[in-house]
Amino acid sequence: MPVAVVILAAGQGSRMKSDLPKVLHKVAHAPLLVHAMRAAQSIDAERIVVVTGHGGEQVAEAARDYAAETLLVSQDEQLGTAHAVQQAAEVLADFDGDVAVLYGDTPFIREETLQNMMDARAKGAGVVVLGFEAADAGRYGRLVLDADGGLQKIVEAKDATPEEMAITLCNSGVICADRAVLFDLIAAVENTNASGEYYLTDVVGLARARDLPCAAITCPEAETMGVNSRVDLAAAEATFQAQAQSEALENGTTLSAPETVFFAYDTYVGRDVIIEQNVVFGPEVTIESGALIRAFSHLEGCHVSQQAIIGPYARLRPGAEIGNGARVGNFVEVKAAIVGEGAKINHLSYVGDAEIGDDANIGAGTITCNYDGVFKHQTVIGARAFIGSNTALVAPVRVGDDAMTASGSVVTSDIPDADLGIARAKQVNKAGLALRLMNKLRAAKAAQNKDE
Image 1 (cartoon, one colour):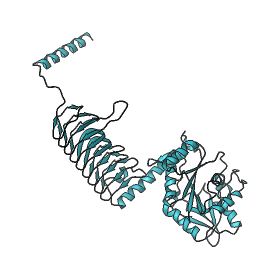
Image 2 (image 1 turned 45 degrees about the vertical axis):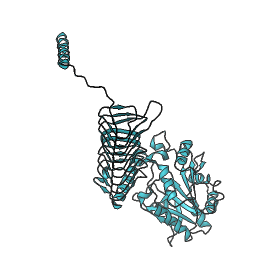
Image 3 (image 1 turned 180 degrees about the vertical axis):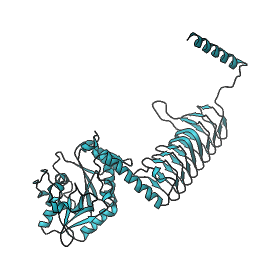
């Protein structure tokens, strides 16, 4: 059965105490909204609809940045969850399939859980609700089951009787039903409750009144974690990192100190990779099998090939492509550069907007001067080239295959293949001048101290 997903992302999130809409606060370098969208993609949703409200333009932009085909609707008045879902009725009017409702501030719903809900629908449940056994059920809506284990109704905590409050099976808010059935039920929802809102949860009672069977699927409570405050956000980050660290270990990655390695939402790490302590991954990083990421390195937007060694204290910025067996050492920064197979940039260098040939050696203190204040320019270093320490390569410039630069050179012109480029002034020694200058300075300082 085809499925569409509606993601509710209209809330202000006042407890975040932020000018940024709640769903745009980030966990693992991705907005909470993107985590919900990834959950929708995991079950191959044919359509994803994001319901915006507070900060609607920002939320819409973030949704489209992640997936350009996202459908956007607006909830101008915050009249409850059923009212929010109803805003998607028009854009889904021609959709023939199921609709699942997710929440932009609930980032950890797994593919397996959503698939279990789809399976319950396929087995005949008219409405499927996701629930969990709560350690502290206090504020959650309760799932009331009938004698046969079917879902009878959902009761909000503020409207529950003492007997219903004793129930520990709670509502996550995630729900699934046939598109036509869901919106027909929503049209019948009323706001006769303590909050005067249109509750999506009421569709269960309405469905049962029409003899539609309803089912509750359960998942671990942690999976339904909602983010409503900075404290929740920190807890969500910790939850994500613990899960990512565990998955890395299970998939064949060695982590020297797992709790000190921080992954992004989309980090890909191959087998037999070793990651030392205090490594941070930003978005869009791929590490191939057999690579070594040494301590205190920061990587984002880069690709590290097999057997490469990065760090310690290295920084790979977006566009860095590190070849097989290449080495990027301590206090080296690489940005928008291709580093060839076996090339070495071992320490204290900046390589940006460049191509480094296979087996080239970049000496300590090398800088590619890629920016003229307005435009970026390219530096090309050939295969097996040797760049002497403290060389400044003023782009655009090319150093040929098997070429060399003398240490301390400022290279402003191309160096042909196999040539040695020397671009520095001739050394001149002034006999005795150093001592005379130092004595003069010492005398001046002594006179100053005497006057004081």
